[in-house]
Amino acid sequence: MKHIFTLLTFLFLTYSLSAQSLMVNTFANAVHSAGAGTASQSATFSFPTDVSAYNQVLMYIDLNCPPGGCDPWDRYANIEIVLASGESIEIGRYITPYGNGDCGWTLDVSDYRELLKGDVTLRSSIETYAGGWSVTLDFEFMEDTQDYAYIDVQNLWYGFDASNNRNYSNYQIGDTLWTSDNLPARTVLIPGSAEQVIFKINNTGHGQGNTLNAAEFRPASHTVRIDGQVVYGQYLWKDDCAQNPCSPQGGNWQPSRAGWCPGQEVASTNVDITSDVMPGQEAVLDYVLAPYLNKCSPLYPTCNPATDCAFGTSITCNYDGQNHTPPHYKMSIQLITKSNNPLNVNQPAQWDDFTVFPNPSTGKYQVNVTFNAPQKAVLNVINVVGEQVFSESFSNRKSLNYELDLTDLSSGIYFLEIQTKEGKAFKKLMLN
Image (cartoon, rainbow, N blue to C red; front, side, top):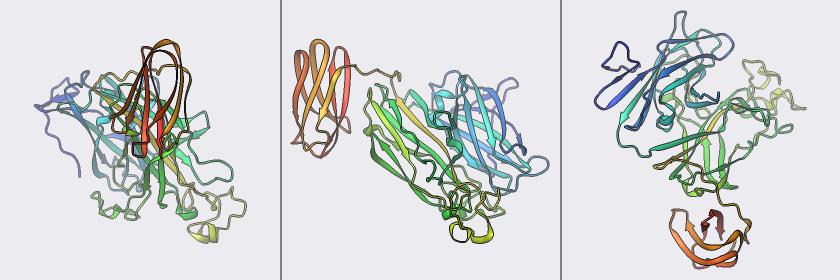
């Protein structure tokens, strides 16, 4: 079903204004034709230069068959913003239907509002090998008081990473006898003014015929970890494909899949980690994939198609591009930081010998810190909802050697803050 818009149009304007919203038209019936495997269209469009009047932004995708017909298969597709630096930010993804070229989707892209202003270069891509697709893409800016005036978007794992020679947009898994599937942890400095911090996951599993029919048809449980602690478990599986409104389709469109369905948009998993990080302090972020060993691989030394491959003897251990394709994930994982104050990254104070031990503890900690010069210091303990639960002041100190007693508090996570005229520094406390 197509989206139909009623617009007040102007001859020389690229967007139209109504009483409560602003429509920006971008790609119009842009043909993505078969060829090298990923058909892309890139262009620069004029967006509003000031988005302070808008809170929500919706992206409308309309998909049709071009002259010559649609690709008959379900294909991965996404929309990216291409920054001036050359870095790409994925703002939405979807999977084309099996040959049905009259479908549309609405995605909320409000997290990317601050990137959708002025001259914006967009790239629309579809992995298509036969026939093609026609894409129309429009954005609607909804007038309302902003929840947060400032939004920052940072890629954590996306695209090619030269540091470990891995492509997170096509991340092959299962060869764990030779290479680890673990993603490298990311250490980030949380801006001092951060009010909400979101760990945004777009991850879909692809490839078939492998052990457990991974990754397209294998459910898996992945975890989000902050400073080594599990804060969220993601069960990557979508079991409502048969109820897809973009139907009927040809082919095998009804079975459940690893995070997606043919002919649907891919919904992001947004994990609120605000209470797990501390503004002004570094945090170690990790996305840990469920363990998996693919015995149906040309690299597995004793591969037996009859027992190790999903389709038994119908395939060999070699990848053939049809019945047997490498298991892989397509990941776009971002850190979204929001605030009503500018998101400048406040560098923490640099002090020698700032240690806390034991940690974890049953309630008593030894706090040691050496300042750069004698000065007043304030020691605060803050709980995960931002409430101060302990405070102590010290005057004219060059150092602190302090026994902190929190035995009267409930077990859990707390944050130790030390503040002087030189700045602030934090430590996470684990209270057992």
